[in-house]
Amino acid sequence: MSVVVVTGSAGLVGAEVARHFGGEGFDVVGIDNDMRARFFGPEASTVANRRELEKTLGSSYRHHDLDVRDRDGVAALLSGYGSAIAYVVHAAGQPSHDWAAREPATDFDINATGTLNLLEATVRAAPEAAFAFLSTNKVYGDSPNRLPLVELATRYELAEGHASTAGIAEDMTVDQSRHSIFGASKLAADVLVQEYGRCFGLATACFRAGTLTGPRHQAVVLHGFLAYLVQCAMTGRHYDVIGYHGKQVRDVLHAADVTRAIAAFCAAPGIGEVYNLGGGRDANVSVLEAIAIVEKISGRTLSWSHVEQARAGDHIWWISDTTRFRSHYPGWRVERDIPAIVAELCERW
Ligand SMILES: NC(=O)c1ccc[n+]([C@@H]2O[C@H](COP(=O)([O-])OP(=O)(O)OC[C@H]3O[C@@H](n4cnc5c(N)ncnc54)[C@H](O)[C@@H]3O)[C@@H](O)[C@H]2O)c1
Image (cartoon, rainbow, N blue to C red; front, side, top):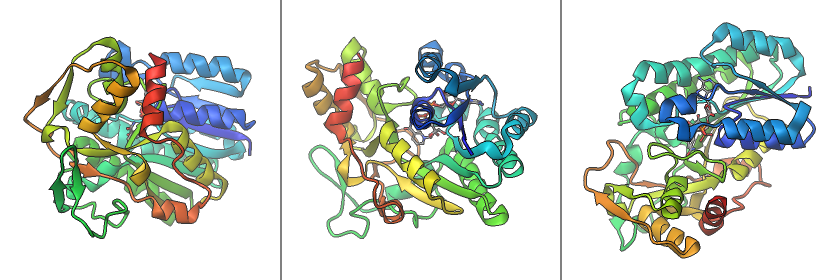
């Protein structure tokens, strides 16, 4: 079992995962058709990441310009490797709420049906493989917005003494809230990934991620908040803070920390697991606080203004409680805090 299949292998998470397993001596089979350029335009293209992988990993990286919607193509590719496949990391996806509303059927075909195609191909070709899926905290819809929040000078924060002070855990309801079309397609995929564990015994995990980023993030206005903010500061582009006066809070996790979590699961997988994954209390920030940190580290002043109308369903406060994952994998922790992440993003420019 020496092959790792990575979908979305040229994207932020996929490229980091591919680099990790390639460095560990696995043969990495990458699937990515640069749909990100179709979603968000040429500046979002992930082709440069693909070229970097081909250069750094050489013959241990094989790229397939395949669409995860192509059920027969995905099945044929995985059956060609069969039981040599040790792990499947499914990171291909349509990642934006706003884009999903423009083309709901395309979003669902990629996020939900694409995931079904990968699960089905894996269970037939390599039933012993571990399957890690990049899900999202949007599976909880906007239920986090029902938490009692207090408005502080630079952020919203949970009311003192609340049970979720450490962050939001996996027991939050996924039902009867506003998910966005994107959240709905990811929730369908998330439930399928769980069921392929429960029904067919496949070793699966859904990583319900908060905000993820890293220096290879091809950030655009519709996706990649912190990397896009840094990009605006470094290039002089104007930044719109959308709603909540910039006090909405997100936790942020570096793609390398995401990769270490996925690698830990792959090495000792459970079945049908769900994990909230994010920077948690170690790495979280409001938009206002992020602007201050970016300006301090970059030495640049960001041109920004506030748009009153918040995005429908946007989380006002999201901090992941990673207790469940850390209790299963005690060696994992958040290694990069917000200033370290911002410094790395600034360095890229
Ligand atoms: N980045 C975040 O903040 C974040 C947060 C929560 C969840 N996630 C999830 O993690 C996963 C990875 O996110 P990311 O930030 O690396 O995204 P990304 O857009 O950087 O990477 C995804 C890659 O998948 C490819 N892709 C898209 N559709 C495809 C298709 N039909 N066939 C083949 N390849 C396709 C894209 O070209 C892109 O290179 C996504 O599923 C996303 O929903 C991301």
